[in-house]
Length: 436
Image (cartoon, rainbow, N blue to C red):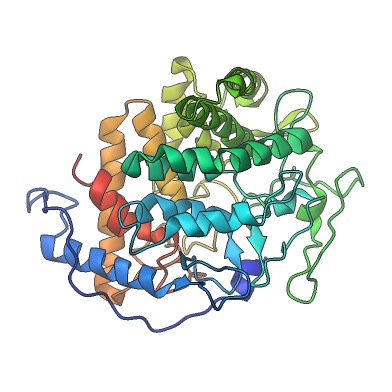
C-alpha cells in the first residue's frame, strides 16, 4: 500500500554539518561486541545535525507556517507523529533545530472541537477528514512536550500548550473510546501503514466508519483496511491513550491544573484494566487486538506500547519479553523487526512495516524497557541497534527511513538522507543509551 507521505518523497543530496560541540565521548571497550569507534560516533552525530538543519523550513515568507521549524522532510506537508519523535533528539539542539515551532504548527491548526489532523498540507489544510480514524496518528503530543521539558524545565511552555493538549485528548476520548474502555483506530492512521489489522478472511460488513477522501487525486484510501475501525479494538492506540492520560496528568500537576488530574488517572486505570482483561492471551503470553470481542492473533510492534505506558502487570512481563527477545520473532540480526519473522507476511527485506526496523518504535521499546527496570536489555537493544545503524552508515554515508531486519542494509522501501525520526539514533541514543 502506497502511503500519502510516500507520494511526496523528496530525495535530495545533503551535506554534513561543520564541527559541533557534542558531549565528551564515553565509549565501550574496543573488543565490545557492539563497539563503534569514537570518530564514527562523532561523524554520525554531525551528519545527523546537518541533515536535520537542511530540513528547516517556514518563516515570514511562508503563507501558513510563519516561524522556522524542523520538518520530517517527506514533502511540503507536515506530519504529526514524525514531528513528535523529532522532538526526541531536537531537544538537545533546540536553537539549531526549532522543534517548538514544529509542534506549535499543529496547535495553531487545531479545530475548535480539539481535532488535530495527522497530516496538513502546505496550505494548512487537513489531509484527512476528521470523521474517520485515518486522520489520527499515535497521540504523542504530551510525550513530545515532556521530552522537551526533560531538558528545558520550561513550565511556561507547558502552561502555554496545555489547553491544546487537553482539547485534543478530550476529542480522542469522545470519538474513539468505547464502552469497554478500549479504543478503536485505523490501520493506516496508526502509522504502521501496511500492517493489516482486521481478522483473517474478514470481508466488509458495512459497520465501519466510511472514509471521506479529501485529496483522492493524491491518495485514495479505499481498500479493505479503510473499512475496519469501530468493529475492533487496538492495543497500540489504547496504550497510547493511557500514556497520554498519564502524561497529561503529569503536565497538569506541573502547571497547577489539578482539577484534570483525577479524570486522567481514572482513564489510565480503566484502560489498563481493560487491556489486561480483554487483550491479554495467557496461552500465548501476548496482547492482541480485538475483532468483535475476540482476539485477532496477529503480532506486531504496536503491542509493545503497553511497556512504555506501564500497563503490563509483573506476572505478565517475562512472558511478553520472551516474544520481544526471540531471534526467530522480533529480535532479528537488525533489531527490532516491526513484524515477527515466524508470522506469515514477514519480509526479511523490510517491506515497510512488514518487518522493517524503525527508529520511533525502537525508541519506544527501549524507553518501555527502562520503565520496567530492564536496564540490561534496554542497553543491549540500544547498543546493538546503534551499531547496526553505524554499519549501514559506513557503507552509505547517510541515514535511512527504515532498515531491513535480516541484513545490515536499508529497508527495501526506504528514503535515504532521512533525518526525520532516524535522527534519534545518532543523537538521542548517543546521549541517553549507548553509555548506560
